[in-house]
Image 1 (cartoon, one colour):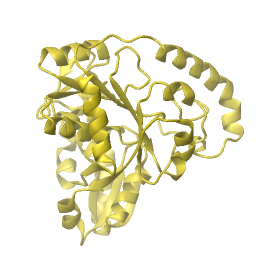
Image 2 (spheres, rainbow, N blue to C red; image 1 turned 90 degrees about the horizontal axis):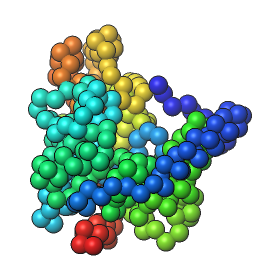
Image 3 (cartoon, helix red, strand yellow; image 1 turned 90 degrees about the vertical axis):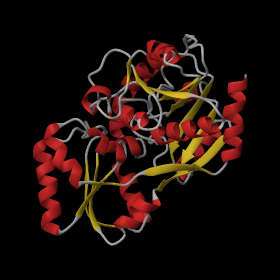
Image 4 (cartoon, rainbow, N blue to C red; image 1 turned 180 degrees about the vertical axis):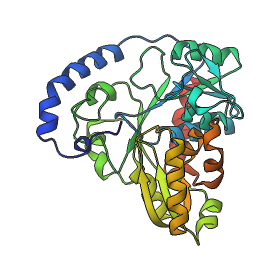
Length: 330
């Protein structure tokens, strides 16, 4: 299901009608967030966001993994495995597991670090520790209080901020902003912070970091002479399209799908035909490409589709490193 457009506009009739439901949902979410979580026995670093949909959590988690490895730590990733059918804690095999089983985010994380997919975060953390984790990087889970965190970083998409500032279903917030800020130790704004300034103002003394998603130079060079059919089924497809254009890659056609969209064989065939008809190169995100893994009907489609890998660069990297490692020492 695609998120409604009014979430990201000034409050109007739709948000007003749904506001009582948002208030009730927010009260329940706030009560759940106030619980005391179980200690994992190893430090837990949580990367979350305030709203439903994407903000850049997975690139942030991958950046933290590299930071921790450079400091001599042994990080494991922990993710819910959203979109996958798996129900028990599972050590993800990036080579053989399918996105339909463990979720697309789990596959991306598992390519870089040992990753546990678990709907029950406490059991997942226990499996990570048993497998040798010295520190856990939790992708998503700011609103999940079942597992105690040693550091929680909230990621904000600078292009969209927190939308109309209402709680689901009246808006995109997962819980009242004030309640979420109480659970945060730092904010990371990805992109221009114009839409995030109100949140930063309410964050008080919380440290604020600024980052940007940078496409892999080799991938950009390979696509420099191409005109592409860009498609994405992520939280904010327009963000992906903007990244392509900023990299100097020409877009002939763009197709946006719902977050975590699973492509059917019919949709794949339609995209291939459209690209061939207009002489375009198909281009998508790493997450979308990972979602094709393990589906026999999409093998050819995946092989014909190019990927634009991105990495997160943080302006205040030394300050972030000091914060993260300082929490580990505590």
